[in-house]
Length: 114
Length: 116
Image 1 (tube, one colour):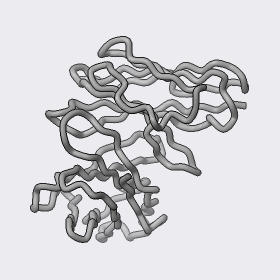
Image 2: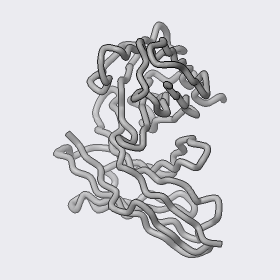
Image 3: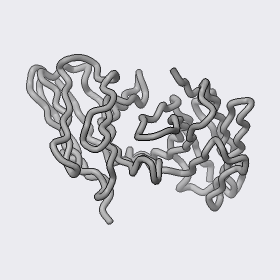
C-alpha cells in the first residue's frame, strides 16, 4: 500500500507568490495533519482534519495560511502571499483515529521563499 | 499545554554498542501516547516505537526498547547493537488519547552519531 504522498517535493518561489502544497493520505485513514519543520521552531502542528473537517487550526501562523480537505483522499495547504520566513519543510501525516493512533508521515515538501 | 523535552542535542556511540536517548514530558492527562520517530538525512519521518500510557509493560521493537516511567514522566529510548543505519535525528513525541484525532507535540530532537 502506498504511503502518504506529498507534492511537490521541492518548491522554490519568490516572495509574494502563492504556494500550494498537496497531500494524499493513506487510503482508509480518517485523520490528516499538516506540520512544519524549521531549525528555529522544530516540528510544529499547523492544522489537522478528522473526517475531512478541520478540528484545530490554532497552529496556523497567520491568515496567509489556509488548508482544505475537499475529500478523504486529498488536502492542500496554501500560502498567499508567501514570505521568506515561510521557508521550511512541510509534512503531511495521516492516521486511522480510534483504531490505530500512529501518524504516518509523507516525505515532506521543502519550501524555499526567496 | 503539553511539552516534550529532549535534553541531549547530540549523542555519539560506537557501532555495536548501546545508547540511550532521554525524553521527558509534561502533561496533566492520565491517558496518552508516546512515540519515537527517526529522521535520517532524507528527512523522512519514520516511526521507531510507540507506547500507550495505560500499558505498564515497556514497548520493544527488535533492537529498540523504551523505559517508560509514568510517574516521573520519562520516556527514554534504548538502541542496542547500534548500526551505521541508526544515524539520524530522533524525535520524542506526545499525543493525547481520547476520541478522535489529536496532533503530536514534538521534542527538539537528538542527533545520533554512530562511530564505525
